[in-house]
Amino acid sequence: MLFVLLVLGNHPATAPVLLGGAADFAILTKTGISTVPSSSITGNIGCSPIAGTALTGFSLVSNTATAGQFSTTPQVSGVAYAANFAVPTPSKLTTAISDLETAYTDAAGRTVSSGANLNVGAGSVAGETFTAGV
Image (cartoon, rainbow, N blue to C red):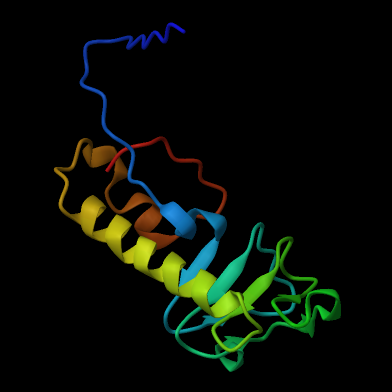
């Protein structure tokens, strides 16, 4: 087999920040997630090591088909996970949080490649699409 890597342009390629298990989540936190009924989140959400009570404002319904490994809610197109949900959820979240911390450390240690990505929208990023880069 032959693999060819073609890089276009005069700029050095920036290695991606590897998210590992954290990539399975739109929102992943150690402290909790709050919402209002009209919110719409695309993807999975999770919190660990904190319990599901830290997911506030959601209309969570435990998924009985998976014996409580996750919950669903109309506000999330994916599912909700918390550290106190049924096995294997706690270990999945422990791995995801560890991967999140590793990814953060990697990204925080990189040189900023473009000032264009600094303080975009003064913290309000609704409707924004971002290109790769630190």
